[in-house]
Amino acid sequence: MTLGTPDQTLPEFARSALLLDVDGTLIDIAPRPDLVVVPPGLLETLHVLRDALDGAPAVISGRPVEQVDLLLDRAPHAVAGEHGGAVRHAPDQPIERPGLPTPPPEWLVQAEALAAAHRGVLLEHKAHGFVVHYRAVPELGPMLRDAVLAILGGNPDFVVLAAHMAWEVRPRGTDKGVAVASLMQRPPLQGRVPLFIGDDVTDEDAIAKARDMGGAGLRVDLAFGTAGDVRAWLAEAAKHGAWPALPLPASA
Ligand SMILES: [Mg+2]
Image 1 (cartoon, helix red, strand yellow):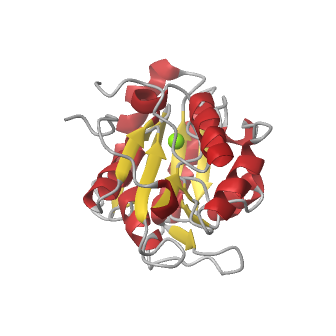
Image 2: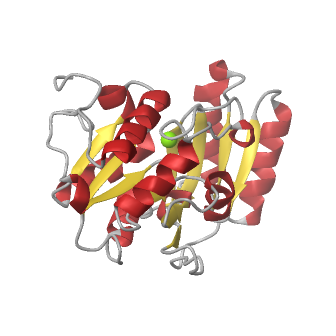
Image 3: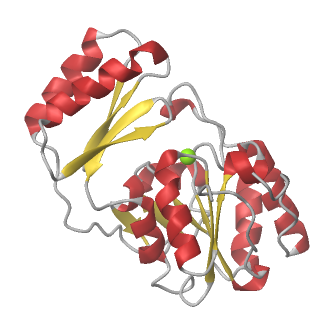
């Protein structure tokens, strides 16, 4: 079975811990990560779901926690950022960071040079890694992957991950599956059944973890269609206090 196919039972609404990816799941992908727009109604939907699920909705993103909080106005109760590299378990709690390695400064110098040498390539810095975006020049993807791997020089503490038109370097051992497990350990998510929704390769770990924990993991393209379809589905859930039927048929 392909990860993320929707042929699975959703947890009972009242017992669900709703875990959501952000880019491509709650908000539409933009040409650059800083150009995304939070659609009207989304924050209201998240607030209603937060009340209905006793604070259980949480967000798991590749973005830093601070960015997610700015984008979503602290609507989610808990936020895991940087693919689990940083976690804020409640709105009034500090951001916790497990002891993760940071990339050597010379890698960042080389990555800056790589981005500067190719028009349309963008470098994004993260606390424990960096991202090389090539949405404007998709034909450079394979070359950039080789260049990023060359910068890492086989260092075993870091991995290169495929994201939306981007190569992301981050510490080995952090992924969105780890983030799901971490978030589910604390109230108000603790004791609930995870329902995770994500759109990307990096979401597969969270999809698998949610299923391992007896819950459901759904891929946007297979279960819903687009981020707009996810938003409409969540708005229906907020209105009725129940999970609506999934928009796409059960067979993938
Ligand atoms: Mg995403």
